[in-house]
Image (cartoon, rainbow, N blue to C red; front, side, top):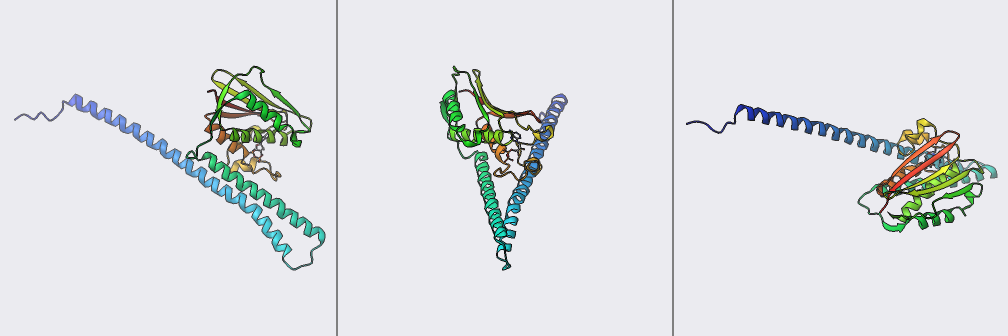
Length: 269
Ligand code: ADP
């Protein structure tokens, strides 16, 4: 009895070739996925170590001040005042840091829906601009709104989150610029994309730090301004996370001594 169950050698070898190719492709995919997983794991570890470092520093300072105040030794009024001020300042930093960490976790958590609404871009940016520039921190800057009068464009955004983005960029622009320098909000649109840029003529960012400013890992935080009064160092990570949840992009062009330009693009609806 002839056995018909075997395929001809050519078909069989073709099948083996196809299978081998598939296997190779799958192996390559697995290797890429594994690499990504390890990268995520590494970032998570760095982030945890960064968080515990950031939390530990102010707690240690507060603990030392409390120990000093409760040590029973004679403390001059001046020392007493400066210790209490230190506790106040460091507690505020801590509160700010914890708030920002929680905010960042929430924004990055894609299971938490954003409150998207379709809005006219022009009145949104115009209202934001005029509401913001009355803040005294902008008194010493020249504030410019550069937006075509006939800008007609609808975007779908979570307005509260987008206000947070602009607030961060404006605050930074003022924080890292000298008095009397200009800060510009520039808005334009095509049929498919809205572009919004916050431009300052301030201190700028060194080229080697530029690629790190949106990250929240340890190496980046060392690139952040040390001892900044209120900055948690997470501002731009939050900005990036919000923009990306809007299917948008953000980039920064900067030159030391000349200024920075943070450019956001958002899809037009
Ligand atoms: P921070 O709380 O330190 O301001 P951010 O995440 O908002 O944290 O910014 C990260 C770092 O990027 C800042 O510490 C600063 O060094 C730099 N940076 C951000 N915006 C500007 C800007 N407009 N001009 C110069 N440097 C900036």
